[in-house]
Image (cartoon, rainbow, N blue to C red; front, side):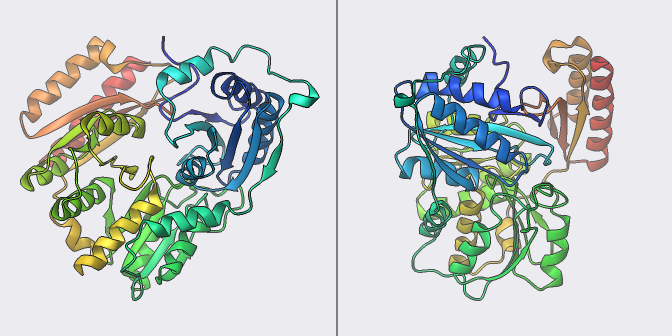
Length: 444
């Protein structure tokens, strides 16, 4: 069976349309309670800064309490903070209300188990099987309770600080921090300042509607302008729910997830702390693979999605992996992608080596890569279309051994992502546009 509601990262959609309604959220809570806390238990609920978070928080709270579970409300907190507190507070389930890097018009719901790990496909399918049932309402004596946890932000901040080497500090480091007007808008600046950095926060004034709006990991242009303008050493940007990070060097150059993964991997390799292969995805830049190979570090690719990076890490015994988008997983520090913790590890490497961010990233050449998103009105499997398969084969023949072609359906949006990568920038761009036109024709 294939999942109908859950995507690659929980349930997500436009607020007010199916499935992102208050009624659905209550039924989802009830279905999750049937599967994961059938005899009652403790459920943590956290969110980002979207206006609709209030509505979904209340609906989920009602669904879990009615099913007999106790609910702890964390308020705005990065997704990895909710995963960490689920473990720390020994809860049975963690719930995140967020649409990550999407605009405020969207929202989503995802779950962590008691170990702070995302649910398996099998568990999500089981939850889906209960969605059509009427929401549970137990008798008064069996209902759960709900309360707010005022210490959530401080607990997560303390955890983040604990991942930074005790013998180091960020004194003398000037950092511009872009909070994407999202869940990390408070904890990011506080954590970095606590470690001694000179802080310049931008996009840290959420109003419920400006999350990811011209800021954060998907829109780093303001950060790139600000860092050299104020003569900062580095810039850090999170996405709306704080599980992704990209950085900017002192000259304003973007350092993406592939480059951050290279820096983390080579530093751990030098220190003897790297285990297993480094895991990227089918979208990771070919330059990363070649640079790691030159450093005699094994590299392998997973499907796109942090859950698949995590699965591959567990299968291969690796401890770090990530995506070009900045979704980084460091199993020696966390159980899920954590943008702030990743930034702290990079800053620690800068302090330990005395090298600038640009110098650390210089060992990884980036191959020209063009991505075109083709919007579709219907669900389309690129591999099932003969027209698309023939076009891909022709493009691969033209690239020969100098590049790659990747087509994949997004797990969170109605788009087909067309990626072409190779040594020749003009050739790559032309092939990507040609393939995108074929995909659009097949989707019509």
